[in-house]
Length: 245
Image 1 (tube, helix red, strand yellow):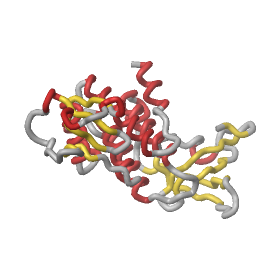
Image 2 (cartoon, one colour; image 1 turned 90 degrees about the vertical axis):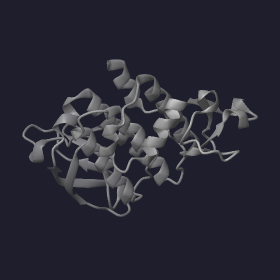
Image 3 (cartoon, one colour; image 1 turned 30 degrees about the vertical axis):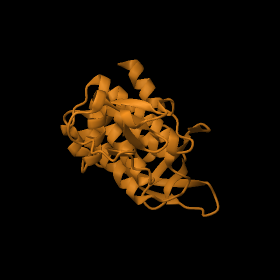
């Protein structure tokens, strides 16, 4: 956010302080120190003047860490990075430290900059990890009602019923009130299971998704996030990048 003629108000996400608001004075002035406005997806080393009883702190200096050239130059990589940053901003409370989320975000942004393929799989992986970190890890491996293992073998009717409020799935034959749920194809279910098993963002590069499966997974995850995280809305960045494709 621009502030007066030459300054900028920005939001930083830090390992020790969580989401914080800072003002970078003179950052938009010609010949500004430290290279101008920090990149929206950049990892920085910063010096700031902290005021315990204020919501806005003074950013004194910063230095970029690592390289993020591809993530800012290629639209598909940028879509993942902006989506991840937007979600973290939505689920984070002001100045509430969550070191695990910081590490997860840094790893996903690094993967979005470096992995050679299957970039669209990164954002749903990140969304599932955020849900798990908030205590809402979904269960896609067994039927909530009959307990049937859904990780192997064919699915009855080729699909299951997804119950976002419960964060679970059920066999089609076990659901008595389908109006409260939504269907999930066998392909989308298997993809969700694989995403939850991935040990790191770079491992996601081995998981390819058909466009139809990606859309189904995206819709299910938006519903899941909305059901369990107050104030979360569909990511604006997804709509913007979709319109540019």
